[in-house]
Structures are given as C-alpha cells and as structure tokens.
Image (cartoon, rainbow, N blue to C red):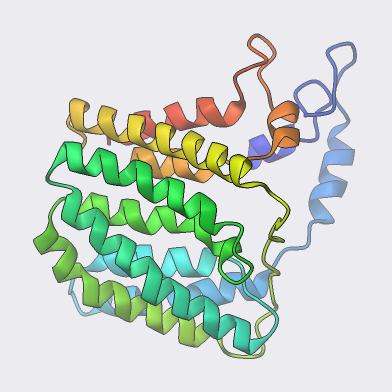
Length: 269
C-alpha cells in the first residue's frame, strides 16, 4: 500500500502521466509524503475502539476476538462528522440498520442460491440509499457489514455474534461522541444522480458481488464474505474515476475490476 501510494505520483504509472518521460524524483515524493495531513487523533480513536478486543485478549477470552476486532475496525475507519448530533445519527444507523444487514448475511449464508439473490438486491438497494441525504455517505459501506454476516456461515453463529457485534459497535459509537476528536467530514452526497445512474451503480455492484460470492461457494472458501466485500468496496458510479484508472491494454476494464479479482483470490485464505 505504501509503495502504491508513491506510485500514484509517478508520471508513468500515475493517472495523469504518459509513457514518454520518467517519473518524478524521490525528493519530490518524500516532500509530498511529509506534507500529508496525518490524523493522529484518528489513530488514537481506532486504538480506543479496539480496547474491548485487547481486554478480551488479556483475559484469554478468544471466542469473539474476530467479531470485536471487525466491529471496532469498521467503525473507526468510517468518517466522523463535525457535529455531535450527526455522530449520534451515524452510530444509530450503523447499529440499527447495519446490524440488520449482518443478520441477513448470516441467515442466507447456508443457502447459496438464496444468498446470491439477496446479495444482488442488498447491493442494488444500498445503491439507491446512497442518494439519501442523511445516510447516503454511509450506505455503500454497509455492504461490509452484510458480508461480515456471510462470513459467519450460519444463522446460529450470526445470532451468537450479534450481541458482541452490537456491543463493540455501541462502544465505538459512544467513544466517537467525545468532542475532542478531529472530525473527518463525510463524502458529499450527490443528490443530482438520476434513478438510472443509481440503478447502474447498483447493477454493477450487485453483479460483481454476486459473481464473487458464487466463486467463493464453488471454490469452497472458508470465509465466503471476503470476496464480495472486496468487490463492494471498489464499485462506484463515477465515470471520471473509471476514465482515470482504466487499464491501457483494455480501456473498457478499470483497475477496480481487477482489484475485485485480487479480493476473490484473497478469499481463498
């Protein structure tokens, strides 16, 4: 990741470069790197969100370590609104809406055909939700909670993990209400997107995640949710982004599409 970040400023491999000249100097790269606005408060907030997992580790209670880590990591990695009221709404949406998707994922996981159908429609509906002024910035990231439910593999295990997931999410939400954290503004909601554009975004995400999930089932992956989670994280409706990151040999295939296949390969672990 560190080296790919450096490559984003490389004139040959960067989005705005060409193949006629060499890359920029190492000194320029280091200068840009030092100028990055590192969010030490966000690192500290993530550490505090992980406290329940660390306490469980110290006490030797390893049954729910993955669940505690996943919940804390997810909440600490999303944006942090400036106003406390907006932070409360964020926590409410993650707990009330997100955990519902978690239970859906766990419930459909044992039935491949049902899981494939639900995965497609979950992505399609989350795409429509992304134009919602209140929950839009969060909508597309909820696919990660749904796929975490898929990873449980059964309704019983999802139900057993549910209270632990709710606890660590609630803990992280309460910690995030503290006023001294530096806010990380949410991405703006594009309320001008047409229903057709939202449907196209949902179809892209739905087809990609469903295909990744089908391969996960056929290949016998231990964790069937990782591959569709990788796809759901990269598929977005943004023609400008797709134009900038398109592969030279196949201009119609974008880097996120190839990234999805890396996610599928990673799911084998």
